Length: 339
Ligand code: AHM
Image (tube, rainbow, N blue to C red):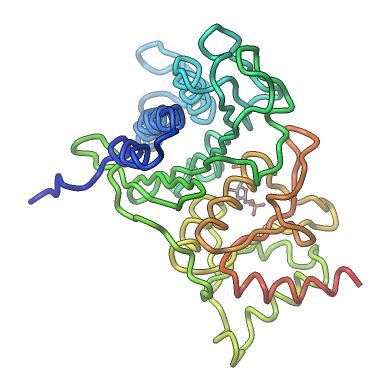
């Protein structure tokens, strides 16, 4: 089999980008490289997930007498490890931790970025061999450089992200990240252990045929959301409906597919949970940023996700994200809820 060694690796690509920005310090490139390293380590463990019965269930002791960490805790530890020992991150917030972790040391206090992440999203799918993912958003600090970072650095609106990305552990492992300059996707080449540029300059098609929603909650949704779902299921000359329903229960995989093929992903609020399930800071904001840079849209049904000023680290938000024309159609239906 011939292998194309001409493709750019993640490191080569970020360095190339750096050359185009004379004022850049390289700190963001290093941060992305650190996340790429953690992703490779997480990938190795995710690929072994089917072997837990042989090697020891997560949370128990394996036959070598080693404690087998739960995969989401393992992923969390890997990310914290690379970011703490790197030189580009002043602190992190994670889905797995109640509080932010401030890397209060001489080097980290000089770093200008903080990072928020969901180390392993869709973790209920691990046991059944369905794609799962890691999501991250990176912000420039607003607190004073040289001092420990603060909570205010993490509670910035999503529009302030300087970069955001995700890793999907699927039929192949991909890292996709966005800066304001564009969205690029890298596929892990297992032969050389590097993420290689496979999807340059990703654009989200303005229309699509896929809608992703948990239909089980249908009667819990607002009138506007139900109207939109009905529209998706009906013949429609303007939009080319009916659309195709695809929902795997791993947002990373669902949004990744819709980003590439065109589509809409929704996790609306319900009667029982008006704010839905997804977390604003490390689930909605990174995807809203990525999809917007790629030409799509993201809202909570009332306002642009990226404009929301967060008040809490783990706050939830309804989430609608996808192709711009489909989002416009949705927003028209949601007017029913604001009457
Ligand atoms: P998790 O944090 O427990 O992994 O849950 C997040 C996941 C998302 O990836 C996915 O879109 C959603 O939960 C699915 O939830 P539901 O099963 O309620 O549709």
